Image 1 (cartoon, rainbow, N blue to C red):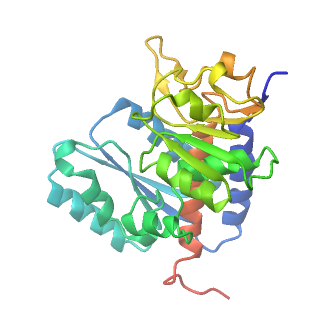
Image 2: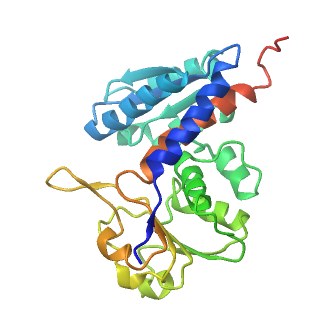
Length: 285
């Protein structure tokens, strides 16, 4: 029997509607600043999705578009300006940014209380000890997709392929907090298939199209494909070979339409939470 498709679009739409209703009851609207440096076409597509979806749920989204040759001091000054703006509750810097800006310096400049991407060292550290303020959007969405299957995660063997600070590492800690036994694989892992075949839950986030094939998947596993690589014909392809994988997996996310919609939605949810959890927020009767 072919795998059940985990419909990220449908799950995201439901969460967005719930978020829209919550925001409509508030006395103010959450504010999100999206900082873009340069004119990366792929970044522009992602930003546009965030702007449109944010507006649809009632978030005031601000697109801060800066030149590619901006100096680091000027960049940090802009971040500080946003940090001090009480109407801005969340700030994200669309990656990648030019190398001369040193992304770790820029991300560290965002106030942890406004770091709705969850990339600040303080927020990542809080995640590691099991007390997260903001969970990075993609890992947060991945967990919700896994939970949508209705399976009890306790004791499951989860294998994460990829160890980035954006996806692989955070999602591995989240799975540990769900009481899974977690194995993290990466480019130096030998005999990758030996690990993936053991996975009750398989999360793949490396950016190598078709890396995982059906014969590398345990029968009935939950497979989450985070990869989104654009092919020469303009189509998006995941890290998992969908056609062969769906014959082995029990549940699987498609590309596109799986993790992507959830990432945007979780970012907006974090922005709302940044507003309602703000200790400086005025108290209304």
